[in-house]
Amino acid sequence: MSFVTLVRIIARRWLLVILCIVAGGAIGGVVALSRGPEYAAETQLVFGIQGQSAEGSSQDLLQQMPTYAALATTATVLDPVVRQLGSSEEVAALSKRVSAVAPDGTLILQVTATDRDPQRAAAIANAVAASYGSLVSSLPVGSLPVGLGRPEGTVAVSVVQPAAVPANSASVSPAVLILGGSFAGLVIIVVVLMLLDAVTGRPIDASSGTRSPVVP
Image (cartoon, rainbow, N blue to C red; front, top):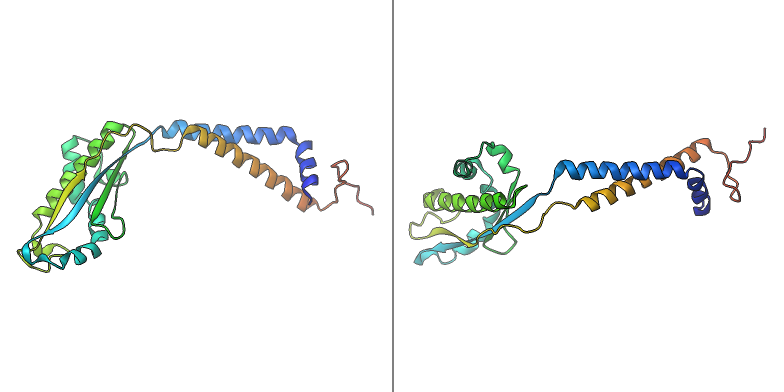
């Protein structure tokens, strides 16, 4: 099927095409309204080894940063956060709105919390950082992923950048969702028209955009 033929087919069904575009945009608008704005607040923690004989353990600590990142979303860290904020939210639900990542080659842990309230997003991120620091500092050295059992080599965690109240929403803007829905509606109706043309199998007169009668 040539491009000109496809354009003629779409032109003959322009009303259906417009309806599909409008319907797709409407669906995108409904999704945008149902989700609402969502804000993300980020805090950063830095890891280090304390102790004169801890030389060389920084490399061990670096290798274990993914393990420390996973620890940030556990119930042991989030339980105190829920109590501190006085929230009725379950820890399992909160863990879906908290993430932690350690950039490769660094001893920095980035903790991000999302919420529909920007102030609450920042409060959650800072509470997670505080709970996380308390947990790591209270663990016996032998139970930590690093430290090699040396009492003079301990892991220290410090907050280097507290979470600030985000000014802008981190969620996809309603305009993008509406435009995306409209484009999806256009793509769907074009694909449907092409499939209908392939199923019927009758040649199309490119000059008129109508199907030629089948000759017996």
